[in-house]
Image (cartoon, rainbow over all chains, first blue to last red; front, top):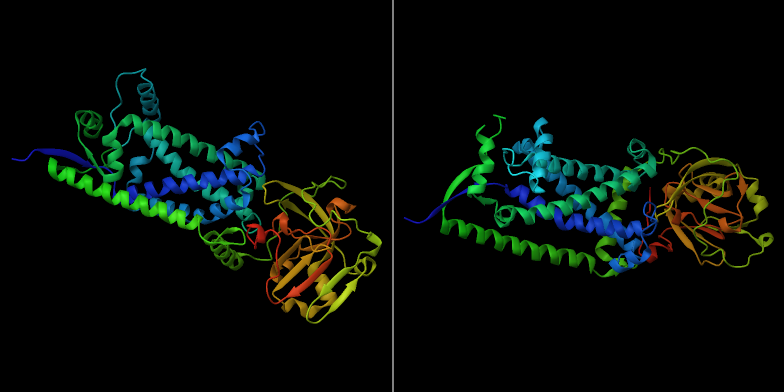
Length: 222
Length: 252
């Protein structure tokens, strides 16, 4: 008899597509956002212009605006498809933080920093992941709204007012971008740490059940 | 949480698992190549007015959408009127850096129905209006301003009422070094003003004396300083920053 292996169907096709489409689009949105920001560096006067020159994103305001207002559509549509899938499939439950998620997140962080041996039992995602993925989804939506408020502050004045006016919306859009970049860095570190089996599942959808996976999933039986 | 179903578990032969993985990675690789080529095609598309053609096409699509959604009933009036005498930020001097004798200044006006030169005194007899707004520069900064002068809609009504039928308005500095064009709809917005005063004081040379355009529903780039000529046109007149890679519509 042929050798067999047990696998989870971990990530649905819709999740994998929207995830991987988001990766280059978000990168383009952030780079073009920096090109736009360069023209009026309102919040970071301490960053020298040579920083932008070295990155090659100086003197490109018009180009940055063109890219931003092109790919914003793909970013918005992709995010909409993702949210719609979560709602219809019920998978939103997997990323909605529970009360216990906050305590779990702390334990996960301690474990990841090698200050604690064991992990709390978990389902598909642990407490830290739930909080991170839920927050980043919400943040994507907020970027859409704050972006719209800056884009059309006269036509969408109520939206702009909601974010504390034009300057308020601009500042929030900037802060949320920084949060996105922080998420991005931690996300990549965690993916590297979690290893090939986990990364592969975001491409193939299938995660092989190893000894480690069985232990983690024990939370499921609870 | 009992309502939560665990991820579906399946048993595969190692061979089948490897095959599925291989297939997924081939699809993924193909998608990455397509995505990469797609983005490259967009960013390398043949430039139209200094911006890749695909981005220019999207500017136009966005313009069409926002033209439909926009209304002249919405105002740029979210900030308090600045105290009179507050300094106005100086950001551009294209077209106003030439020596000009103010006493010789006239406003040239041209449309299919009227061709006329207006002196400042003649213009000052027209009905006056005042408003305030948040001036927004495409670079990112903004500033509350107040302004006073003649609403463009009042100007047109007084001198050339037939003019409203023309779809475009062009404006130029006296030697046409700086020039903008706008859609008639935006020019007829109640806040669009041929202004001779800002923040309670007459315009100085840095702000386009004796007369400039203030159009609060557009980015600063459209707010031409020191108007030498206004003309109505059937086709879209040239626009300085639109020729240099920016969105022509620039509507807020």
